[in-house]
Amino acid sequence: MTSSAPLSSTASGPMVSSGPSDRRRWFALAIVMTAAFMDLVDVTIVNIAIPSIQEDTGASFSSIQWITAGYALAFAAGLITGGRLGDIYGRKRLFLIGIGGFTLASALCGFAVNPEMLVASRILQGGTAALMVPQVLSIVHATFPAHERGKVFGLFGAIVGLGAVSGPLLGALLTEWNIAGLEWRPIFLINLPVGLAGLLLGRKFITESKAPKALRLDLIGVALVTLGMLMLIYPLTRGRELGWPLWGHVSMAGSLLVFLALVLFERAKARKDGSPLVELSLFRVKSFAAGIAVQLTFGIGLGIFFLVWTLYMQKGLGWSALRAGTTGVPFSIAVSFAAGISVQKLVPKFGRKVLQAGALLMVAGLLIYIWESDRYGMGITSWQMILPLVVMGIGMGLIVAPLTDMVLSEVPKEHSGSASGLINTVQQMGNALGLGLVAVVFFGSIDDRSAPSQMGPAFAEAFRNSLWWVAGVLAVIFLVMFALPARPRQQVEDGDGAVDAAGVESAAGAGNAAGAADAAGGSEAAKEPALTP
Image 1 (cartoon, rainbow, N blue to C red):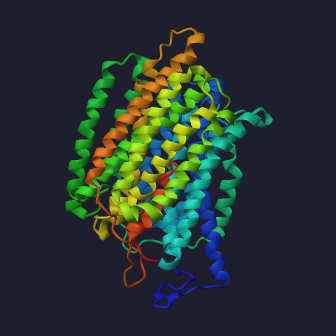
Image 2 (image 1 turned 45 degrees about the vertical axis):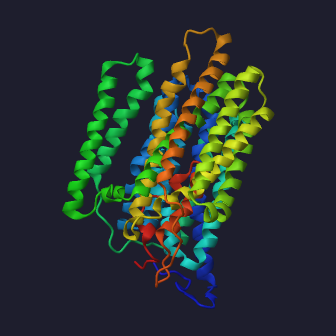
Image 3 (image 1 turned 135 degrees about the vertical axis):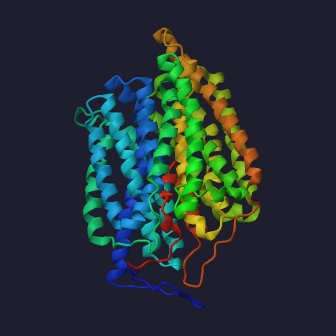
């Protein structure tokens, strides 16, 4: 694709283009950013509606976990494949297929007649999001010259911040309003007009681009990753409900053998054709290996926290969806604020100490929350939750925005695209694993035979127990962060004006701030300069 703007900058400053073609690419930007926003809101909007879904459909606790974990697992498994497909067959084409499939899956979710259909539709939604989302930054990278990408990524960060705040609020309002007696269903149906508009406008305004030397698909690698995760997560999710049968323990142990087979296969594939799903040589870079460990454990912690937090407020304390949604606003604002200052002000001066301070702040916020929940019991108010939520939000913002750049800072430039895809995939897998662990750390503390009057206090106690687990995860993260580089590598441009992919992917850190690490995508195109078809 030929960008309508010049691709180089001069010593006197960047060249600025204008005219209809320039406006056309800004329309294209608005379309792909709207799709990223839709995906982000869809992740955050569901949690707040979970109690309503459970009451309306009679879904079991394991079904509730799969409504969230199924999406995360399908998304994680398809991210790198979605990016590679865009490189091979065209990013515009895959974006349109993805947004069309996402819209269809949203309709199926909205009209689901039972929990099983809803779970299946959510898995389909996650898989189609994995086709759509990786193309977003790839299209941006191929459309805009290096000197304009700072402005574009600034807009992206603003969209992410807006999604972080609006998702829970929108979910709460749509659930509370009970539009046309549909209860929770509008949280999915709202995607239909947005998705259809994106599909029609995307065909008109987005210009096609491909990678000149796209790698081959590693379908066996994708199959092994998905199988291993299913063998690990499914028994965790259903084990408590089924009385922890023997096959569950065998399956979880067997998942380790599947992951071992994945490593052996990826080594062989790298030697054979140089296009493995996982570039194992990256793990020889200490900071990258440590960063992957941080992303995985951070995803586990967040997967646990956000689900049990929703259940605590609505099922334990008996709050409405609207009250629970508004209670989370200070947290979202704190994340967005801290994410901005961490990248712009703090990390350039203090390096990884900022991320470690973020981990300690999150632990402090969790401890305050545990103390307040125990101190005030069932009478705790939204106002009393503001302090721990703001402390946690600031800590999270200090971590997520600069983390991707830190992890990529010592990765060879030729592997930065696959490395960034692997980072985001691993975090999504951690999120899915954390959601699976909810059965152990949260529901495992609740006695199903308790009287109805005791269920509220039981949920509150299970919530505090879960927060101790999350605090332990963050303590591990703090220690692993010592292996990260003291300072991130400076963003540079090559002679053709192509920005270093580490710099490009640092914009994705803003997406992580709201649980939208997926917005960074897994495309190899992240390291390509502006491309021509």
